[in-house]
Image 1: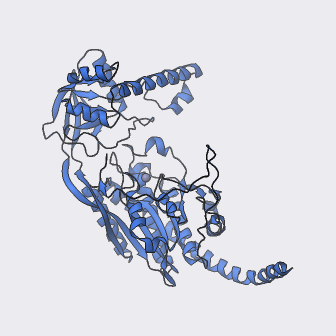
Image 2 (image 1 turned 30 degrees about the horizontal axis):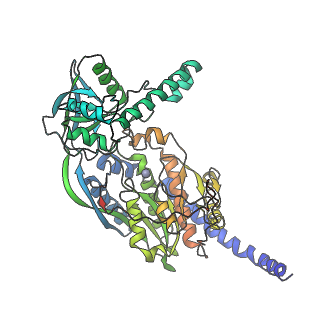
Image 3 (image 1 turned 60 degrees about the vertical axis):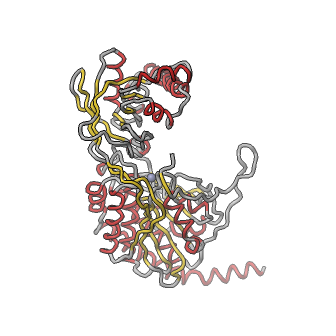
Length: 517
Ligand SMILES: [Zn+2]
């Protein structure tokens, strides 16, 4: 009875204050939408960051340049910003990389040096190629190993097709598609065995070949789409490692197999810069009522460097920069402090955000919410509670204020499971902080842009990114103004497959001196 009366009492009071809140919030949200639509800076920022500065590999001068650029943008918008060093990394600068087939005919090949790969000098190295042998075992492999001396060693499988599966699906007969897939599965398994029988793995094999006197390593990490390769880092320290696109890799492979002894010239002019500082770039709108409580907009700033890092994570970066710019204009005096974290070295293991969590316990204990975006250019379509028991209450309340066109696209899951990795929100979730992933629709991100040589400006879908900037700004605003501090209570996690109780992910320390291979 007592409960009922209390309920009625609250019920009578609520309408008046809700109306007021609704008005104020909808006016603010409308202003955010208008600013994002009429005065968008996304195209300009994208051109400056992806076309002029380029990719942002940890330890490169471009990463430093990007940090300086971001700080200048924020200053321009009247938002204080700074760099926070948290470690150091192997400094390296990409130079010219040029790969030509020079025998039996001339063809410039599509390929590039892997990150941190040593240089060849200005003339380059010209040599024949050899395909990794299918040795019976590691003893046979050691006997074969002297054959690589002075040659470029091809360590990737010859792909049976350069067409993505969706293309086969559309045009092949079912029988030929099935046959191709079955053959490819057998070849892939045989190649996996070919590597393991050497006694080395994908990391140690290039080093063994380098020590045996190879001229260089040639690989092809095809990304299963037209014209896409994934470009990661080299394991060699004296000889170059290059990725050659599927079409040209296949050409060379078949010429070697048919005894036509192709020769290539590899010319790479990167610079080794020793150890250099690595850092996060932070900007903030100081809170007025609760300056020591924080809402964090989060997106890693670094990238791999096979292209421009436009969608990994350029678009997440721009989403958060644009949200901050809009907030400064529409909500210049938020209740709580709104901080944006542009993390360094996410790609090598969430290092920047892990360092921030470790270095700022005073902030971490007072975070209202973290919103991270890091899976491409698409509009946000998923939002989960990351295992926080009461996330539905506050996330639901905040999301309700987003424009219907944005909100209605988003499928929510509560309480969900705590993310153990994948992107920077996980560094915060592990520390018990309500941190959420604004998860985008695919646009074939995994195949075409994630860590590929095609992650460029033209892949950005600006209308989707504009919507994401609005969403990030609205969520940050709502989280900042919420009268209640968010609950951190964790849900009881379901048992694992073995029947053991589910365990919350544990915080991890960053790598503060890299790389660690
Ligand atoms: Zn990413």
